[in-house]
Length: 102
Ligand SMILES: [Zn+2]
Image 1 (tube, rainbow, N blue to C red):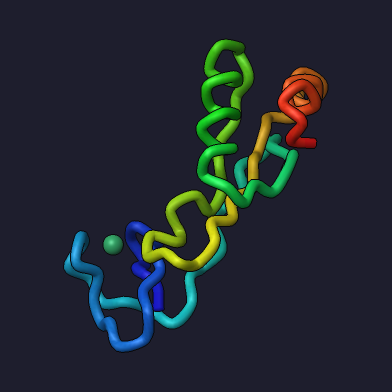
Image 2 (cartoon, rainbow, N blue to C red):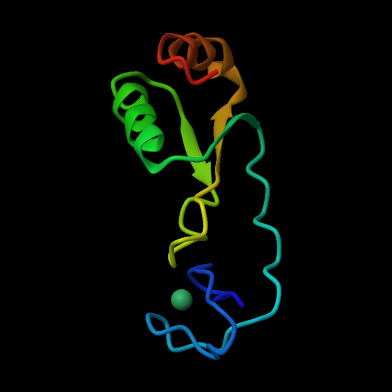
C-alpha cells in the first residue's frame, strides 16, 4: 500500500498514512516524467546516494533521485533511480565513474 501524497510504502494492514492523514492506495500513479532528464543509474544503497549528492552538489549538475522515499519501512532494500538532466550526462557519467558507481 502506498500514500498517494508522500509516496511512502506501507506494509499490508495499514490503511492511512501517519504523516499525511490520507487513505493509502493500492498502486501509485507513475511520477510525471521530468522532461529532459535521463536515467543514469539505479542506486541500491543509501550511502551511495549520499556520496552522489555530495559530489553532484559541488557541480552545476541538475539531478534528482526518483523513488528515494518510497521505502520508508525497512527492511525493503532501497532502490532509487538517479535522474540527470541530459545536458549534464557526460559530466555526471565521469563523476560516477570516479566514484566507481557506474
Ligand atoms: Zn503520506
